[in-house]
Amino acid sequence: MMTTADQREIDNFTVLSDQWWDQNGPMAPLHAFTPIRVDYILQAISRFFPIQTDNATSTHFSLQGLRVLDLGCGGGLLAEPIARLGATVTGIDVTDAAIQAAKMHSIKMQLAINYQTIAAENMAKSGAIFDVIYSSEVIEHVADRTLFINSIAKMLAPNGVVIITTINRSLPAVLFAKFALEYVLRLVPVGTHDPQKFIRPQELRAEFAKVDILLDHLTGFTPRLGGGFINTSSLAINYAATGGFR
Image 1 (tube, rainbow, N blue to C red):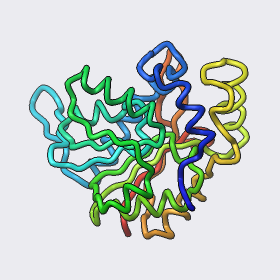
Image 2: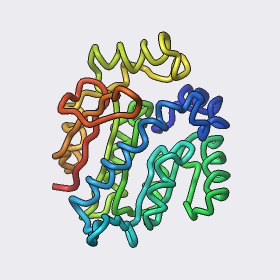
Image 3: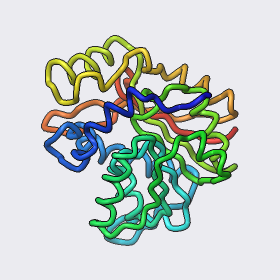
Image 4: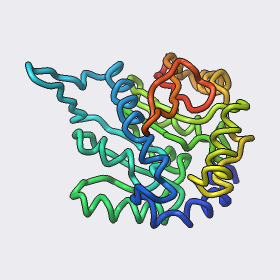
């Protein structure tokens, strides 16, 4: 039976599930990565939907009315800020322990997020449709990338937007995302990443093109001195891609 779920990956993340919201624990890199990921998601959505309203003193974002799927949501690090902006958020993951951690934290934060332990292909079979589907640091962990992308296409509304962030299959990415983070800096557990599953931007675009989704905007991310990440024109390590149906 075809599935996107990789049991080895599930086992790896199950061990970490009680530490999703510990900003000094093994998920610290994801916490540092969250602000720029949220910014990019909002920028991507704004290309397809009118989400921004300005007044004289500030900029307010509202995602009210948008159906959003956080595909591979983990403990909810992205689902929560998106929900706070008014979106109707569904978060799914194949790691049940992560979903339980996400549910508990959302209750604590008084946020109504529909969390489910379910694989992408099974969610697609349910007939659910979303205006926004984002999958951040997930596609490099799935067992069947073609099935994963086909599932996204089935769930995306005709005028919807898909947002992917992932790791390039390049020497700099392997050195940084695999060896430096896992073996040198020890910021993530050994075995978190399989470099063979990393995907080059041109491969990602080609695979989405097969389901008539054009990823027409790409940007890179790089660590910033002093913490956090910034956008870069280089896609050599971490990058994001976004687009919709052609």
